[in-house]
Amino acid sequence: MEKKFAMRSVNQRCKLLKERVTLCTRRSRGKLHSSSVNLSNMKDYLTRYHPSFVRALVYMLQASEYNTEDYLAWVGRTKDFRTVEKRKQLKFTGKALALFISAWILTAIAVLIVIFGLTGGDEIANLFAILVLFGFPYALPYVLLLPLFIIKMVQLPVEGILIAQAKAKLKKHPAFKIAIAGSYGKTSMREILKTVLSEGKRVVAPGGSENTPIGIARFVSRLRGDEEVLIFELGEYYPGDIKELSEMVRPDLGVITGVNEAHLSKFKTVEAATNTIFELADFLGGKPLYVNADNEIAKNKIEKGPIFFSRKGVFPMAGEWKVVAAETSLDGTSFVLEHDDEKINAQSKLLGLHNVGPLAAAIHIAKRVGLTNLEIESGVSKTVAFPHRLQRREDTGGVITLDDSYNGNPDGVKAVIEFLGSIENHRRWYVTPGLVEMGEKSEEIHRNVGKQLAQAGIEKVVLIKNSVTPWIEEGLQENSFGGEIIWYEDALDCYNSLPHMTIAGDIVLLQNDWPDQYA
Image 1 (cartoon, rainbow, N blue to C red):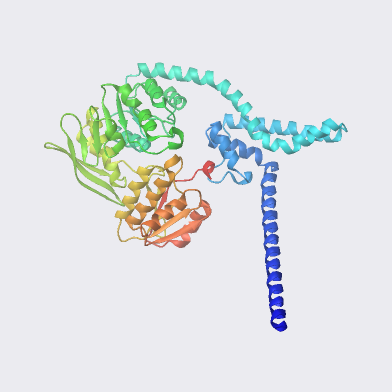
Image 2 (cartoon, rainbow, N blue to C red):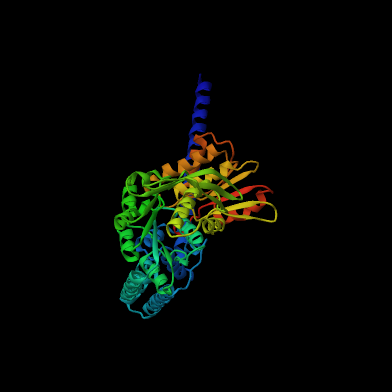
């Protein structure tokens, strides 16, 4: 009996000792983890003392288009300020240079305060110097907004004069003016129209992102006055934007390319975005308005009055033009547009059936402004993929890359996945960091992207790790994806690795880019 009791006592002591050892181990691990976290936080804090800190702040302002709300949100998310310039670099424009110099002047003042404060011997001066030493790196991102405010106050009157001059010039300009609005597809529509109409008219359009009042004003200042057609892309971020631009441009014809969740983080609701985009329709009144009927939101917003265009054709109030024999491949897209006994053969180098509607609309508009059928067919044949919009290139190893990095909206993504899924006898890769500015619908949208990829049977899906791509993976798995999912921490590492993973005949679709401010 005593022996059993002794054995039990020993076992209990061993068990107690084991529990204490386990507890100590956990505490040690906790302390190590805590120390690791503290060390990491300290390293992040010290990046604010790095010489690149000033440059990083100015770049963040520039990349945020000097929107203080977006800039401050980015600053709040950033830990290591040495790595904010990844995909793009700071461009030393006049505004950026002024901010850069201002930031260094403020930094120099702070350094002098610290030096003289710590060496002066006065206790109050010492205390103030210490506060500046440790507080300035946190204050500078906010203090930098003061010179930005001053610059804007100087710019506003100058920009106001330029915009007023542009309005007066456009009012007198005899050219036929076309305005394009929509959540997506504006640039593609602009370039299609410009290419087709240029076969018979002198056509000009703003380039790049000149879709704001000041951007359009600068473009108008370069006009000679002998242009026959002017094409404007109207940018929208907030309610009233399209109304303001319409009143400035005073278009004779409008095109609405569609409405979706793009920029939803700005508009908050799709309804607000829809109402803003259709400010163009309100301005036009009884003038011609073309609306993309492939987009349900745009189609349902206005049922009477507009001319609808889609993959099926163009359906104005009187008569209709039907699309027949539409085909697409890696070489381009073709179809025939028919109206009674009249036929126009369309052969474009644009990829994907989603381009049929915009091409059909461009043909109809070309006839409206007086181009012949031969001129129209010639113009359509010259339409090619625009930079970073499903742009095809093939390397010496036989790998085909489809660069769609400027396509960051749900409708565009759906269209290119459909196109990629239609290609046979190739191993297909889909590379994406996801979409930005999707607001509250981000999870739903990205799950749908995963679902679409699974249904299309894409063999390889490459995801860049961030806040949204896990939802794409969940959408893939929920729909029994049979291919391979590959993860990368960094987009540049991914792009550098792709040549080592692909073989001749592979098709690699680069879908959207993830701007630095959303990293």
